[in-house]
Image 1 (cartoon, rainbow, N blue to C red):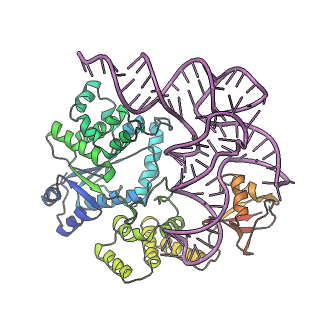
Image 2: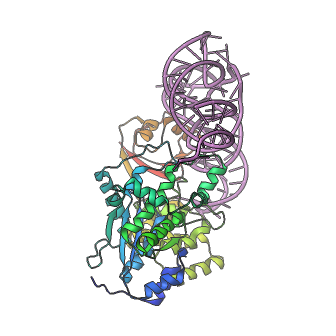
Image 3: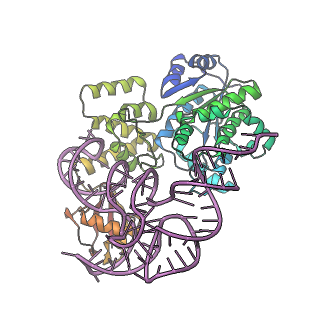
Length: 406
RNA sequence: GCGUAGGUGGCGGAGUGGUCAAUCGCAACAGACUGUAAAUCUGUCGCCCAAUGGGCUUCGGGGGUUCAAAUCCCUCCCUACGCACCA
């Protein structure tokens, strides 16, 4: 296959700097390779246990999109084998062995979400999918021992994460040492030229670099991308556990709302990492912020841009309108989920039955705190025996809106 | 294998027979203030019950002692540290 490779200097420079933390061995080497006109192969790994992809992940895919457009070969590696081993640091969760079907379901969900960024339908330069169980499940113990001889325990222990756990007298399992070995071996099996991942993957990706050199005498480069963090506090902006992650499969409204709820300090970085706007355009926004423009308005533009990427311009306009009406003008949202209930149903029962609130105790607290409001009458509901006898639109807490019809 | 210290709610970490649904911190949730931002202040934070009260299930698993156990005993599992081992 002879694909035409673009060597657009400006584009390549941007790929090499935008959202990039470090390039190994160095930026110049990769630049040289990209300018050579040769097609290179690039891979990213994904975890098949999760069908949840968030905005933080999108950074890598936006870079891949650019490389793909230049004509390079993209490989998505599904870590079905590594996922099967499970994360030993989280002993509470059982080590799940996913069936091929479950993996396929997650994979489809992944494609639906990432398909908004990467062109999976491209026939001329198709994006390839691989599963690492293909080569990892057949590895002999001998081979694994041999792989292990490429690294020292000291190297492993230097990892921050391990060092920290030793210092804190927390368990560190031998199996955790296998991770970099197996992930590194993926690079050997795939014979790729470049791997892209977040900075948290640095060690594993570099292990692959070592192994590719040993076994293939091949220089595999590594590109680490910055994680979305609050530049002031250093806290992760996209954290599933903190509930701040914005999933790519969320509705336009929810995506818009969550973006607006994001801290101001991360706006510019999010533009850089999660949108396709040019750096010049982003620079403009930054100037406006410095000039003292209300960050909220820049954030609205960000939210609009993000929603547009995943739901289209029309939905973005609508979501923006809807957000402004609901939260700035305090109007009743134009689109509210409707739930049909029986006449006389108790409010607590209904809210719990529809998973809007996790327990009746929680409903009771919300009622006591004045967090549940009848939007049409504009009054708080505090009676725990409140019965729904006529259609009613409720606001529960800050962001749940629901209409009950009888 | 031996010894020592441990295993408590989403996390960290108190509590060592009744006053413990379990101090406190973080996270989370709600209210106020706002821009559904941040910061700040206030409150909530196992589940269930027409309920200033009552019931149920929790403190690694199982069994026991007691009117009463997170707290005592037995047993099993798990972790850290030290000793031993180190082909």
